[in-house]
Length: 466
Image (cartoon, rainbow, N blue to C red; front, side, top):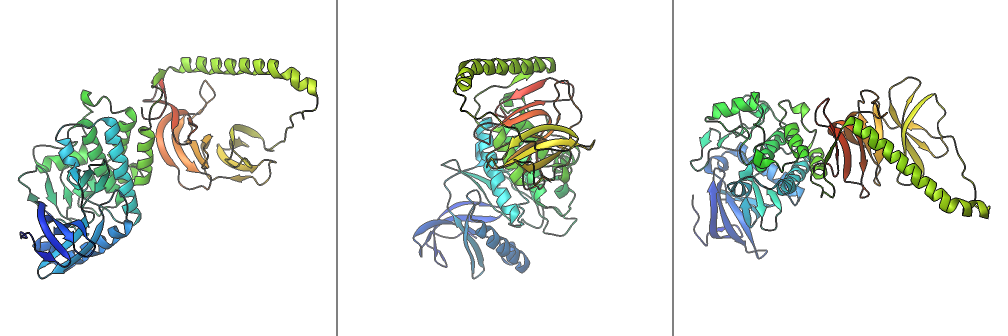
């Protein structure tokens, strides 16, 4: 149904059509109560006349409206006038991500910038139990200011498969019952293809497909037919990134691969972890990555130790005489902090300077991280068995290595780099095959030494993701 200019839907006066699609027609309208322009979407008749679908849309519209997140399209109102059901949303100026991608791949830094915004919007929705189920470039809007907005959260699709003539994507619906499919072929997760009930991790898979397309300039699972595309989603990995996507860093490519794991449990646990990984991978670079061979690394370590010793001697020579001459300066004192048999691997002060966090292997047991007062009292395990401490930032977040395999020639563990809290909880995994890591002075940017593959050279990367 097409609405003429001047038509009123409640307090909203239609000004001009903006577009149309499978979810209905969208109009620019004037909110006569508040004196602002809005977008009004008139829902398709099959949705508007289906009490169950309309009720579901209203429930999810209320939930999305409560989010008030800058990366989610705001819903202001919904209503019904006669046979016309409509939703009122903020009016956006810009274009869809699909329109951007018509010109090819995005620069890696721009793709990462948009991807972080998508992940943050998804994270806010997932916290409220809202799963998008149809994430794709057509449902992602980039405003003129560069802000990304996720569109059409929770809007039910048509109950039968429909192929839109202008688009090679096929939209299919599943409400909540298993055995039926909902999503857009090429962007669905494996569990959607199988008709299973999905959770937030399905959106993370679809996100990976979108990020791949932003970086590679082509679709990850597009085949000649919908059936072939769905088979590819179930059984195949996306093609390697083309040479033209060489500016997509290894860290960004690993994020894509992690999102596109076939099993939901092997993907990022949640969108917040995904956003964190993206932010780490897209931090501004001040140094380039350089391969460091294990032998070369050992020489580097020895050189740094020698250099630090030389600097210490210089300082001692410069100031030691004055310190000794004055005699009034107190001499250093030492306080024993640990009293168990074993090895202390690393220790750091907490941000307040009142406690020490350290990793140790006591009495022949696996490595664990402990928190202690300065005098060694009040010792408690942080709750990260098998973890080795790397660093602590000003917010009390820990960089740790999970499941360290063995001592290396340079007396350092290798394992999976993760972020954890002093308060415990599940660590957020960041990067496998890591040998060492530390925070930059900003407490967020990471410097990491890692291997791309077992037996390969080590890379020293700062910031991580460049």
